[in-house]
Length: 135
Image 1 (cartoon, rainbow, N blue to C red):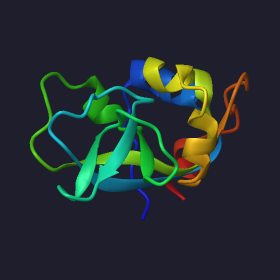
Image 2 (cartoon, one colour):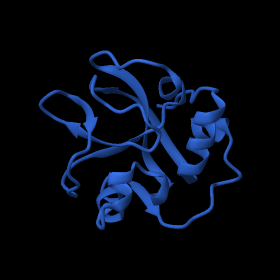
Image 3 (cartoon, rainbow, N blue to C red):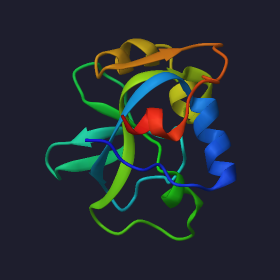
């Protein structure tokens, strides 16, 4: 499933800094406590059947990255089980992940297990357009 990624300029720059190659995005339910920060690493909570802020990084869990430009730019908090745009596969810049995740020594291997290839020191993917992200 593909989705629209919104239009706000600050959020667009944050997303462009995060993405380093083709990505797959999906609209998936998130917990009301999810940080609306582009690059926030989220883990799937099987007991609540939604994504939550990742607290620990182990390869046995399923991870995604918050990439919702519209929600990122909006004030307030999420409602319970708000559908958010998440990166579920593809190439991202490790340095543009949330600070806790970016500093984690095993983050690259952890995300790779979920289909996300995190690379350090890669320039933003200049050829990326909204339509490419939606395919």
